[in-house]
Length: 478
Image (cartoon, rainbow, N blue to C red; front, side, top):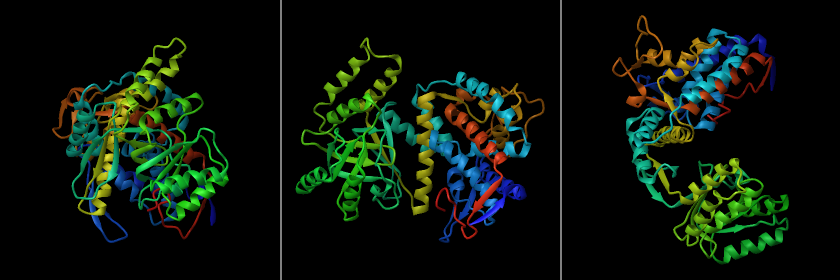
């Protein structure tokens, strides 16, 4: 490992950040440019997808690559939080670096800008709005229409589970499914090749409320599952280290088992247990369960107790002892119990095509979820430009707008004033809220927040420690 003082190399770090940002930003908007990616396997592909571009960047110079990875890390954090925003985050961070604006000026105005964005947001009420959000996020009219078709069929309360397909065609199936916000306790349970999930069919579900620390009790459960020739999923608030060692040893020997942390906190855990019991068949099995690092989804047709459970949970909303903050939790559980799942399979002629299709769909699904949760604002960079118009960061706020126009080869008209929205496809002014050029408000907010955090990090960091032999993208394994 080599340690160097960053102050001696700051220009190279910034150079790397700008190089990465320039490439990612070039894909932004309806007039975004195509990027050619020639990977280390010798395969050439062309894309306008900002996420695919960002994941492919690893600069040859180690110091420049640190700047590139800082930018990619910031963009990836936005995607993790709200499902979209790679290019917006990149454009904002590059503008901060280019302008040299004091980070204190940004942070001083951040709360007010976020408040303005939130106040200007509109809640989604139609499938057409979902299509508009998905089209912009995926940079694909075809995928926007597909997402709209799914939500038209399954409703706004349902959720979409994305998987890799087995053919060139992207398609979906609709199942009765229930998602919980908790996943496996160790990534070693993710036994599917190339995925961070494990899928069991006709699985036995066991709820261990007592948090048993005795490995022998788990041996008996595994013997029962084995005799029934069923995969086993055990759900508990916690597992002892001896139990985890025992189970992982069996995973290594190809025993189909997974340990899942019970969803929820405090009294929520008990309520979630009851919800789970209503979903599981009388014999303790489910048709299918898909478990990831932060969530698991159950698909089961035999839910004889489900309707009664829905009535019970709904009645809790009217109870006098329910506090206001509990209403969100109860409504969330109701939506899950009523939920229908669309399982979407990303297709592609080659593995790389399929991966890009997956990335685009992941962006679109995340953006739609964010917009359903918090609403949407004018797209094309106008929402942020308007929200920052009379602040110390007004020029920063115009960066996405300017980038979108530049990518389309359009110069800002003389006498232009915020409020006149230019469609880069037609080069004409229109009302974006009426024509469906919209962005999830949470994506705009988180892009600004995460770009600011990375900008502060860049300004405050003095030393770097890096492996001179490493040429890999440490964030994406590239």
